[in-house]
Length: 97
Image (tube, rainbow, N blue to C red; front, side):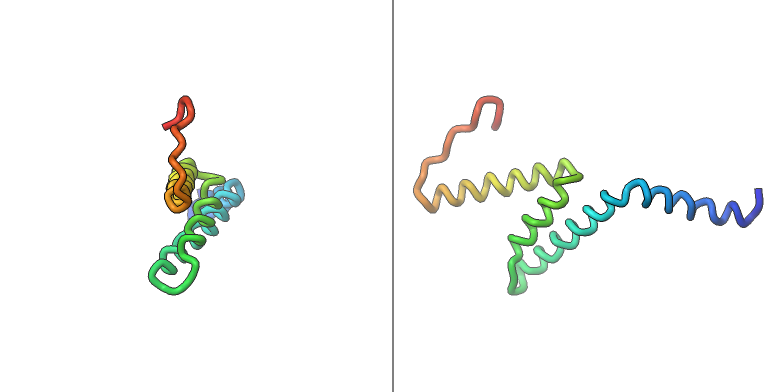
């Protein structure tokens, strides 16, 4: 085995990994940027919560933990809306919490 082949071996592995998982890398990058921007806009003037929800929606296309976080945010938003409108909360459906 030549030294040149050994040095370039990890580079080939990295290129193969990127080629196979480009969508997941793109989704993670875009969703992560939106979530981080949203967190920054919580203390700066801007649409912080909107960006966090958008970032979680993008991340939820690839990650189960993001789906759960997005569902939790949706449930809390529905509870807040019901509280403001004076509606009584609906009991959970059969098989759900």
